Length: 272
Image 1: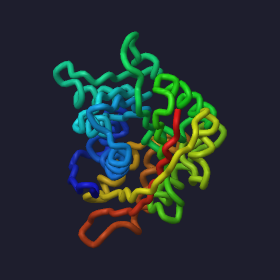
Image 2: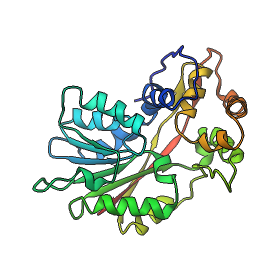
Image 3: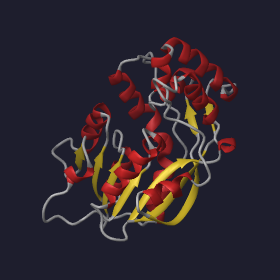
Image 4: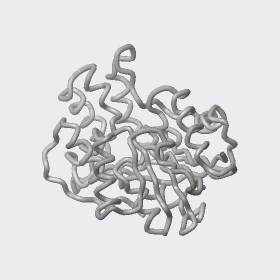
């Protein structure tokens, strides 16, 4: 499944609320092929009890729930989490969502999770590798022994067209005051993260996840909504970041005005 090109005429805004909405309306859908590939491989269905780390505005949870899974998720961004609640709990639905640690979603007497996912590559890269490993270990402690824990990241940078735009974020960010959340993926990054978290790697896969936008404005809003450019904007200013981002995206602007960036994502299945 490829991303749907949708025209968004709302102007770009630097407000956190607008960025969260741009994530939900424009960017989050770009990872749908990844969600589908993992859910198909792991046969997600009515017997699945899923915990999502970095659940964002809830699209991956919504897709799992549509397959019959019982879903729970945590995310550090309260605005994205509010949008997830709108999607998953419109009438007091059964989905459990939280802003804190995964343990906050466990209840005495309820079955342990049997699938944990960390789909957002920036969630995996944000902060220190040790911090992410600790978060994964805590999530795994809430899961059944041997349950799959899925990590996702970018594929080789030469096969990810978005890498050029993300390098803008890394170059403009002040490494001392505002370290970037993105860096090129190493071949064994996911395996190393799994090992540090005490998990056992047990298979991997690659998925094409093209970034497709209806126009340049949508592309800029979508990329800015990832959070990858926040440190760069703090170190310089948003106008400079936007200018250089447009320049980086220009090679992918097509004659019809759409922006299309082919990307390969990689996922790792580890065991708790």
